[in-house]
Amino acid sequence: MDASPPPAIVRPAPACDAATRARILAPARPGDETATLTCSLTLGRGERVTRRLLLEGSAASGVTLACDGAAIGPGEAGTGLLDFAIEIRSRAPAAGSDRWDRPEDITIRDCDILGHVRIWGMGMNGQGPAVRESSHSLGHTERAQAAAPTRVGILSSTLTAFGRIPLYLGPGVTRVTLRDSRVRGTSSATGLYLDAESADNVIADNDFDIRTGREIIAVDGSARNRITGNRFALHGEGGMRLYRNCGEGGTVRHQTPSDNVITGNTFRGAGFFAAPIVVNSRNGWDFHCGADAGYPFGSSLDNRDNGTGNVVEPNRTE
Image 1 (tube, helix red, strand yellow):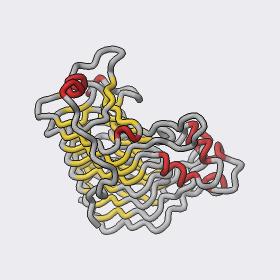
Image 2: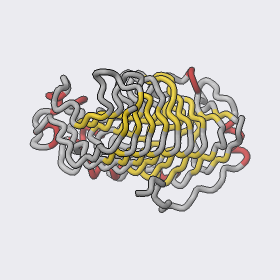
Image 3: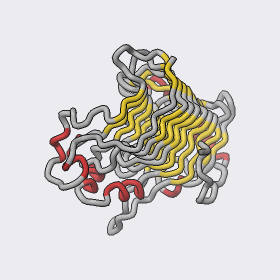
């Protein structure tokens, strides 16, 4: 299967004009740390964007950010949860509507990203209020996926973490491609997080050499992803864990970590007790599991991970 992003469906965004480009490149100042990007931006090697880039709603659809090695993000000073280097998010429904306005067909290429990237729709994580409310009725997976950004490509780039997870795909995010890239730095958690109800993402031919507080990739109730041809320096931690984060925040997790293809990856530096890949790694062993009690479906009915149909070989451990 080709690891390239699916063909664009929406029209490419027009190029940024000179005034917009100058504003984005101007140094960030207190109270003016974020730049909204709704046009395609081409940067040159040696240029630096210190503002946080926000791509929100359908206004950001079709945007290409081509860096040619330029740096994006606040860097080491940007360690707070909301100090994103790049944030791609949906816009909440307007009054009287239930339709989320999501961005589609975004490409980020050849960028040196200093800080964390988060892509999200209904909520930044599985505990978001809108995610929790939706999860209490059937059809939640479909609603979360319809609300979240889709078809985002991060290609031939470097992501450097300064304490936060460098790439986080929120609930329902689909068809993100991370390819031919490098993930570096330090994260107190993982190097990549695929959150509940996300699906159909491609993680291919990347180099993960990041110091983490746990496994490099978390597949948390995420399905049908392809994680292939990557190289992992584990530094004594695990490589990937597939599980379902039952109950946390009162949110019912509907989708199981199933039908993922994890092949052709190379792991080095594994710890004695840290297997490179573990499927169904929690199976209800989490103190949050009772917090979503009372619903006859999903993790409320069964706290186990219940991942099935996952292909996890061949891979190689050095």
